[in-house]
Amino acid sequence: MTTARARLADVGIGPGAYPRGRHNTITDVPGVLVGHATVHTDRLHTGVTAIVPEALGAQRRWMPAALAVGNGFGKLVGATQLQELGAIETPILLTSTLSVYRVADALLGHMLARPGYEDTTTLNPVVGETNDGFLSDIRSRPLGEEHVEAAIAAAAKGPVEEGSVGAGSGTVALGFKGGIGTSSRRVPVGDAEFAVGAIVQSNFSGTLTIAGVPMPARDLVPGPAAETVGNSCMIVVATDAPLDARQLARVARRAVFAMRGVGADYAQGSGDYAIAFSVGAGSPPQDAELTPMFRAAMDAVEEALINSVLAATTQVHASGRVAHAIPLDAVRARLAAAGATA
Image 1 (cartoon, rainbow, N blue to C red):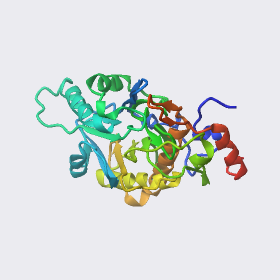
Image 2 (cartoon, helix red, strand yellow):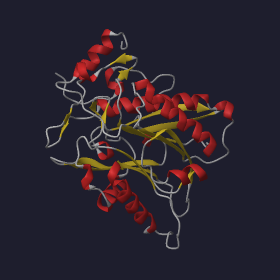
Image 3 (cartoon, rainbow, N blue to C red):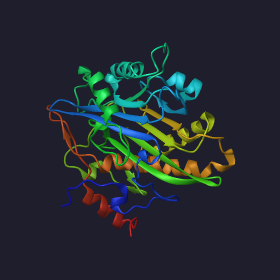
């Protein structure tokens, strides 16, 4: 029995139309860093994940960005100004639903303490969330300044830890343990090649589908499937292509579309959001050149969602509630039986 966790590429599924990036993570986009602060105890499985554009600071106060709302049952702090101005002014943090306001306050404090912000009187922190209440004592609101500072300090280039870490520590997806997942693609836009990467916090219902092959939790895990609370998903897409806010909104909408490819049911109580931002510089490309970017973004998001499940580890709450990791041998067997892998 295989016990090591895996990613989509490890179970034999190719990248689609465009190649994966070097690490197949959102950090393949130059200047984008990711860090986690993770809490695992008998009653808490929660944390913070920080997506940090390295150049954002006193010399570059904002980057073009956009928001797409698939279903607005969520607590996305900073959403209206992000949508109105088409910009982010801070790192993007992901966390637990009832900790989102403490995390936002801590992010604001972090930014105001930075050199060059001494006279700042307005700032828009962006903090997204999903509900980890199935596996964590969410009402205790345990996250705050300590965890925000730790996640930002840990933000780095290169490989990104996935699964039951950071903001994904206690989340549940498609009947299995969910969590953090990431992926990237190299994509042509006009005469140049750029990176597009995605990172997700998965906590939604439906029937997992990988490469078109259904993977119902009721068939693959012992006992009952894990139940989502809040039923949501946060998606962040980054690129170094110099897209403007209007174009990034088009990318963000397609990022939400990608949830259907993995079997999301878009339930009534789901808070499904995608934020897209660009670290690039220069004139934006023509809209006619964006089709590859749209396709690559959807492929990266779909793979990131699957990675969030494949990489996650079984977590148990003191009450006895369990979210099982998907059994990888069963995944490989189903994919092979369906002819989805070579």
